[in-house]
Amino acid sequence: MQDDKNKHSIAGRQAPRVELSDDVRIEFDGGVLSGSGQNISVQGVFFTADASIPVTVHIVGRGAVRGRLVRLESMGDDRIGIAVRFDEEAPALMPTR
Image 1 (cartoon, helix red, strand yellow):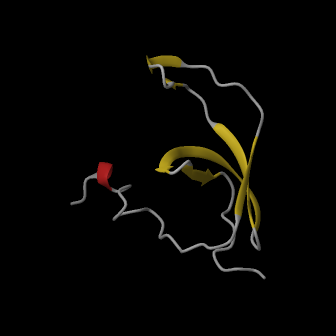
Image 2: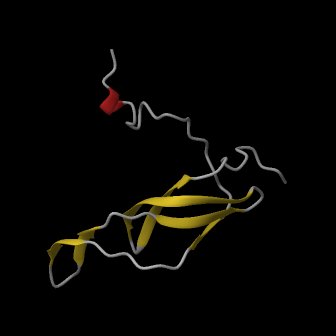
């Protein structure tokens, strides 16, 4: 029997991933986040907040969809990885061009 805490692992994702080469743009809705400080150094600060960050995702050839920012990850060389969970029906997985 599979443990529920593992059902979200990369190998056991809830939905299959499909390669995407189209350009993606997100718009952040304005607002302020406040939270509880966790640690600080001369390089930066880490804090947690009981909040979500609403965004609109635009994917070339697929339209726009509302969602919530769920993860930012440093990819090195001044690049970041951005993960958004859709609030609405996902854009078509196949190009509509």
